[in-house]
Image (cartoon, rainbow, N blue to C red; front, side, top):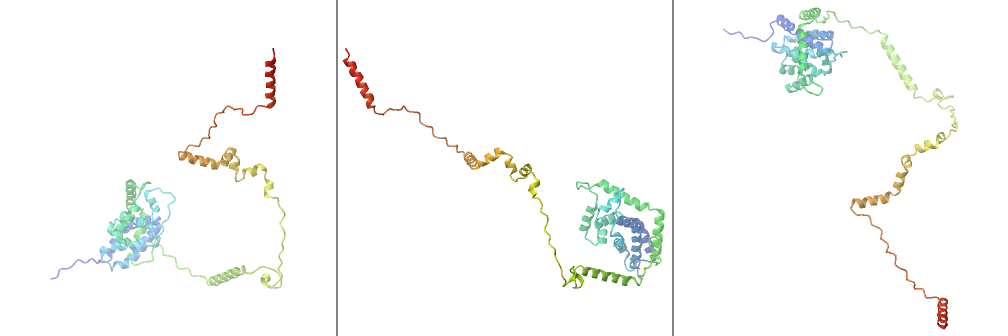
Amino acid sequence: MSVPTVSSRPSGPPALSAFLRGVERRGAVLAELQAGDAAAGDAALAEAMRRFRPEAGGLPMPDWPRRFWALLLAQPRLQHRTAVAVAIEATDRLGELGSGPRAALLLRVAAGLSEEEAADVLGVSVASYRLALQRALPHHADGRADPLAWQQMREQIHRRIKTLPPERLVRLSSAREAVLGGDGTTTADGAAPAATVSRPRWLMPVLWGLLALCVLALGATFLPLGSGAGGLGGVGGNRRVEIEPLPEADSPAASYGEEVAMVTHRDFALLADPNGEAAAQDLEFNSWLAAQQAAGVSAPTPPTPPPDAPVEEDVAPSPVAHGIAGETQAETEDAP
């Protein structure tokens, strides 16, 4: 007697229905916050369910969560987030993150996956996932982590999962039942997609005609302009160029006075500083003097002239004066 083994294969539509019902609320909130719009998120969720249904039969049940969340994040509606006009709640600031870090955070909080499972969904290593999650966490202006903002965001996400509006739950349930019933044309809003509109037959000829006109107009811009019998553009005709001298204008300097000329002079700063101009004339001497003082050499003192010496009269006595003196002496001696 053989012991039956427990198979991990799905037991039928009830298992798939239970799985989709279990991820319905979390998937709706994750898609809404990733896309920034509830309607776009619900449509992406319904499309992910429709694509997951045929793949679930060929996958073991432990692989269902990874494949489902990967299909949901791959939806084109979740690639671009709708900007929030005014941020009211903490979750509205998720738009400031990139698509990758935002998905990493939502897989951890909204989907409730572990780090290993979330990294497997994104197709990255655990280290890369942790780095993306660290970038997604709220931070202060100085770069420090903000635990209060993180707790507030986590509580708001969980509250959204538990308090989805009843009418939205009805739409999600209808979409899930349509997927389980094999109707893949029903969207989250319960409406069939619009049929492809065929193009009118006259549209393409009109477009080609407009394109030909554009090409002709572009080619006409390169033709030379002129007149005469040379055909279009006057090629080969008589083309005449008129030359007219320009009227004589006053000299630009005539409209300004002497004061303006002095102010706009390139050496106005030097002209307005006579002392500086005088010092500039002795620039070489001042430079030499400054170099001497920097070297510790005192300026040479001029030589002191010798004191005045008495002037010696070396002039020979005049013969006339000598004769007068002799006569005076003779008269003195002859006097009685």
